[in-house]
Each structure stands twice: as structure tokens, then as C-alpha cells.
Length: 321
Image (cartoon, rainbow, N blue to C red; front, top):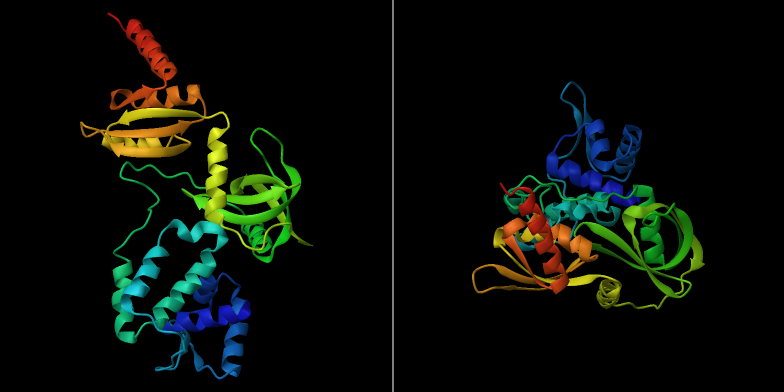
């Protein structure tokens, strides 16, 4: 851990020039005292870092000093910087590691490309916090210490003890065998088994976690994509209702924000979209499609069409002059 931090410190000084101890501490998410100790360690190891006193002082590297890192071409570096520019940094508590990796990517470029690539990456925005209608996506946060324990258990193949709050239930401690981590639409999930039975846990509902020393009971190799597809299919078959619906293109995202899953999507003859989606139940489907008004039409099942017609008739009668 400290070795990675020392590399990040050197890269920060190379790419930004002179920085104060406070600025370095903020970037590295450590205390100022830790930064000062790291500076001393770098100097003792022969890295030419020096201090400048005064109001505009700080720490800097001697001109021309360069770390030895594997090179990337400009397009490869741009792809990595762009991928790391969105909310992906929040996945599984790896934000600090991603920031460190991005510094290494920039440093691996020839000096002539560093400035232009960094500027180009700022011209791309991936998954902003709001859309054109100023709606903020639902974000789910997991405490950093909790995420670290979960991640360690998954990677080490150890059993995991979690304090989990299922829907409408008080939190309870459970010991599980972790298989992997999945993130979908900014929601994170822990795939595991418990007592030999498949279990899927929403990360935002994990209140605390503890990696245990015992090895997890799980296969050595796993096809996580296949496991996720199988569990998704099982989830959709448990009491959910499939709905065939037509929707105006401009309301597509409004519809998708309410569904449990999308099975198929294709253009219709009049420019609208025809989708097969899944809702929790009939009441959920009726509520969601009512919000879209005349910009959507339920084609099936017939029970949903009747429910919407009855609701519309009641509303029309209420406002009949």
C-alpha cells in the first residue's frame, strides 16, 4: 500500500509541478504528517524531491526526473482516461485506486502527448450526474470500510460475514460464501451462496461486513456473466409480470426508469418503440404506465389494459362538465 502511495506522490509532482504538503495529503487521502514521512522516504531512496520555502513554496522534483513506466500510445491512454472519467470510479469502492491508475496512465505517455491527451479526455463526459431534464440518478453508497472487507473476501476466496437489511426486515448477521461483485445501472450486488443456496445481496443494504479466515465453498473458476444471467432469469420468473408496451421515443427513459427489466426493444411502424418489459406486479405496471399518459400504450396483458381503461374512465367521469 505504501509503495503505491509513494509512486502516486512522485507522479503528482511530475504532472503538476510544485505542490504543498496539504495539497498532496488531499490528493492521496492521507494526513500531512504521512506526506512528510513519504517525502523523507523518497529522498532517502534517491528520488530528487526538494522543498521550497515561502508563501508559494511546496515540494517539487528536479527538472528532467522521469519514472520508468510502460508506455501507451495516445489513443490507448485517451480510452482509459475517458473510461475512468464517469461514475465508474464509484464501483466497489475503487475510486482512490482509479485516480492513482489515471495518474500512471498520463505519466506513461511521451511528454509531447501528455497535455493534449489530458485536454482531450476533458472533452468527453461519461454518465454525468444529471440528464437533460436535470434528473439525478439514484446513487447507492456503501461505507468504504465495508466495501473493502467485501472486496477482500471476494478476491481472497474467504467466507464473509455481513450485517444485511433485507426489504422490510431489520438487519441480521449472515455468513456467506462470496462468488463475485456485479454493478448494473449504478447498483452494486454481491453474488454469493449461503448454505449451498444461491443468494444475491444489494450492496447498499449491507450495513457492515467482516472477512473471515475460513475458505469459501465455491468453485475455483467462475463465469460471472453466465451466473448473473441465470440469476436474473430466476428473479424475473418469481412473481413478476411481463408487459408489452408502445412508447414515444422521447419518453423511453422515463419508462425504463420504472421497470424491473427490459427483455426486448424494437422500433414500431409509426416511429414509436415497442418493448417487452417486466414490472413487479400488475399494480406497479398500472402506476408506471399511467405516469406516461398518452405517450405510452399497453398492448398486453389484457388485465393491464382493462385496469388502465377503468382508471381513465373514472378520471374522465370526475372531470366531466
